Structures are given as structure tokens and as C-alpha cells.
Picture 1: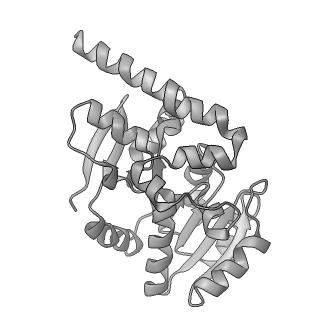
Picture 2: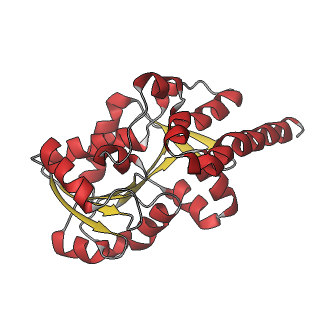
Length: 245
């Protein structure tokens, strides 16, 4: 399936050609087993270094995509042949999954974060207007397991942010027997609902979306600091340690 595996601090990240992504997602939907996708950014890596269960979830995921310019830079620094175009962000993946769900007439359950920017009142009219053929329900982390057992979705998209959404899916996926594909998409749902504007294309192309998010949400300064300065410092230490062996 042309999926390429990399390791950062013993955490798995993967790239897959865009042309092969739909084929892989379709195979997940057609499978007899359940699949979890994790969209990995620098914060995920830092958290996984200290949280063994979160690290296990990423490493056991059916697909752990590269969602973050910092991951690309780190892999390039380690000598890998990879580019910004190899990212598969949650914001891109959510549209791929919606398109695939419509094509397959699959049911989708959106598990929103009850304290997030996007609630059902914001999301429902957007989905109904932009994707009139999409079959979906909307819940939150408190009622989605019950809703899933009533509605029988094939896809569940959780938006609680990491590691909460990924831990929640890992702990609850087996309780939702109809689900074949579970994905944590985090703040991507805020772009979809319009709760947050997406960065201009030029900033996304250059990998500067973090700066746009900081401009729109100054309270994210601590997260940005971790994703850039703390992460890159750890990458430098990691490579130096490897060269000393």
C-alpha cells in the first residue's frame, strides 16, 4: 500500500501517497476489524514520550499520519527524504473521510468535545448545506458510545484534542461494534464548522499554519512553544545522542 514508516523517539509516524490514501481508507471500511487513525504532530510526540499508553496507541494505530511541519523538519534533519507535501493533516483527512462516507453511503458519528469551540448548532447546518448526501449524527464524549450502538455508524470522528480523543477512542472503540474506522481529528472540526478560519493557502504551503493559529488564538502560546522550541530541542538532543553511540 506504499505506506512508509518512520520513527521519532520510538514513536511511529507514516506517510502515504495521496493517490493511495483513498484505497487504504476504503480497505479499512471494508474490513472485518476495527481501525484507529492518529494524526501525529510535535505535541503528540512530546506527550507520548511521557505517556506510555499514548505511545502504545500511536504505535499500534492502523495509520499514524504526519500532521505537523515540525515532524517533517525533524525527519529531514534525521536524513530522511520527505517533504512538506507528505503531511496528512486532520483538516485534510476529515474531508477525505466525508467524501468516502458519501461514496459508500456510510454513516458517520461526530464525537464533539463538550467544551470545544464547535457544538452541534454550529456543525449541523454546515454539514447539511455542504454535504447534503452525508448520513451523520452528532454526539459528544459523554453520549457517543450509546449513540453509536443505536445509530450503527461505520466511521467515528472524535474532536477532543490529543491525547484525550485518542485515548477515548482506544478505550471505547470495542464498545461500538459497527465502527470500522475511528479517527481523532482535533481542531480540524473547528475549521469545518467555521468556528475558526483556516490559514491562507500560502501559509499552509510554507508550513506556517502554527503562526496563523497563534494570531487567531494567542492563548495557544504555550502549545506553540512546546511544538516548536521544546520539540526541536528534543530532536537536537536525540540526534546528538545517536551520533555519540
